[in-house]
Image 1 (tube, helix red, strand yellow):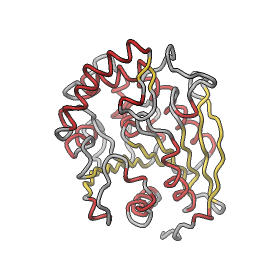
Image 2 (cartoon, rainbow, N blue to C red):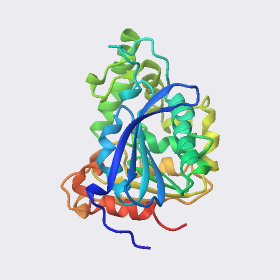
Image 3 (cartoon, rainbow, N blue to C red):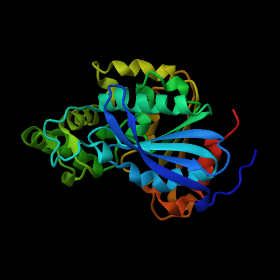
Length: 296
């Protein structure tokens, strides 16, 4: 079935709050088509990235008939404690993001929309698919620049910069300040234990697959839906090798990994974040939407 081309006027949005698995309130935005709803899609953010950068893509998917939810992980964006100027003392980890926030977002969508559920995971958002126990609720997963983020699979000289940041500079600063300030090159401020756990994984040879305390790794084989992973040849973080390492964790399926050169999308640069720029509406976005809305 060929879906009609999207129009910016065919969707509307509403800022809402959803409740995480432990009762914590998460800032979110729901995008709905003005016409018939055919699919549901959950967009899961990269680390230290606010949900607002996904607004254009979410609206595009909604205009094509999808009910779409974006949200901020605890401690970031609109899920940061109200009235605070610092995250010092705020308790959260990346494991919490997956087990409490992503799990709840999947459940929220499944409870409200009896439609095929698509999962879009950007960077950490894609990693989280393998960590959540309810990933079997997802029909199709599109991973965008999602990787096993070990420094050793990044391209030089970025790998050396990231290693120094995650091994020496960042952890020391996080311990002293009680959180990791975004101004050191992260994006948003991060809770201390989010950053420290992330830094531990990044400086390990096989990312979180080396973390013997990460019990959530047992959830990778639970996912049996369709999986397509997009990597971009000019992305210094989610290189083809790093994407392949993450996808290898999904042992019950055979992921489809697609390496895309910017020129193939009519662009000079895509990198780690460029997929979500509106200029890709008629190229990368169209192909992604068509894949997410394929008949089961």
